[in-house]
Length: 224
Image (tube, rainbow, N blue to C red; front, top):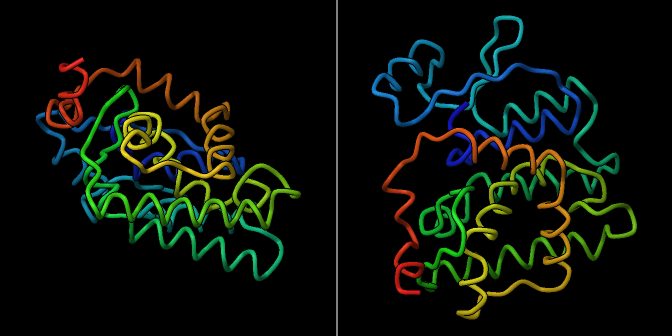
């Protein structure tokens, strides 16, 4: 897996494996290492992280790793067939979409009070995110605090967004991109989760800064 401060793709399967009880050992390859590419190439056929190796079989891609862990444990997907399909749909939408949110608000767990311009595309992504989160919570609030009641593959795929809102959300709200009450309650619950807190604490300890990411949104702090 990659850096816990920056690697959104690594966070997704990490939190899923943790929440469904799939035991694993982690190996972090930091992005700033001079031999990063060589280390990745020695392990991963796709030369990407994250990568799960189980019984010698190499499984790449965050969503594929989560699906495999769900198959192994029987956990992480709703029991109801329609809810299960919708959870997979939400996970796939995050996997392939929300490009403005990804590009304009890179995950930076250690970052705080960052400000980025609210572009039209970013505003649309936040609005769609709020629509999706609040819609799931309205339907499943009686079943538990996660998107589909119990923690699922959809929550794992949106986990990096929790930290993005923690880093940039106050400034986005100031510019008119705020979340509804349902979405805000969901976000607050997710950020208080012990596993999410463990990831955050590990990111604060790891060092290995990436200057180009750390500079995103810093102009606001400097101006203050």
